[in-house]
Image (tube, rainbow, N blue to C red; front, side):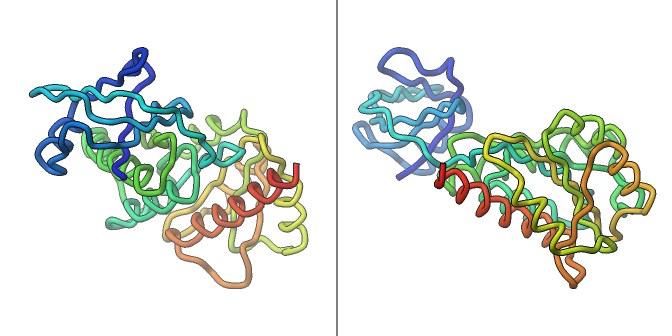
Length: 250
């Protein structure tokens, strides 16, 4: 079933008003008809089964048939701080991170990042990444669209993460699989989690030390060196399984 997102303000009593680019998608791409059913999320953890009641050139009005049970979000908010990768790797990272339940994605300009974006290029990239995040949320049945933030310098990103409950930084020189296991096992549903992933060249030692000074925990993901597009998805997968297992046991 087709799935769309609106804001809470577009939900009014028994109807939902769909506007913007989704109108063209419903009418001209999907060629949906009056009476057809669709699912609509309001971005505030509510999802509705609706049917199309009316269509015009600039809006689609959907009649709410029932409010659906929502159980697709992780019990913790995970923030992915991703060092800017080369080529179109960020598109893959955004798409898969959304499928794995990430709450927010923060592109980070690190010292070893090959990609250098000025404000204009960065703005266009973020728009593209946000569109991919929305597509990933629809495809995976998410009830919220994770936000892709503006590109942050490394120290700004560390400051942004300081209020989170847990900050993890996978690092190829970190040792101690048992310590990493204990660290992840100690994370409880409801805690906010930040994950810092380096670009292709990894983090400089000084960057890791700076993060640790600001309450980050350096962890290992095993004996192999993972690509930047693999490392974040690996730790997200581990956290997704851990958090959902812990929530199920509560």
